[in-house]
Picture: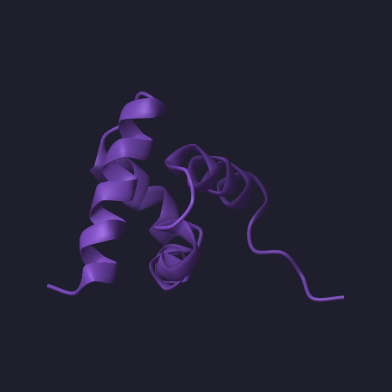
Length: 70
């Protein structure tokens, strides 16, 4: 398993715990919003910052989707 996928699993499990959800529920929400690959691809940023910062980004992404380019 890649380090990106390992971290993704860690992130959604921890995010789910912090938000009263299971990792499977978080994954389902990300899949439904079309965000799963985007979050996996954010490994380089997410793994070096505080986990709470990644959680805040996930909150925003799940509420608003991907930002639109200007």
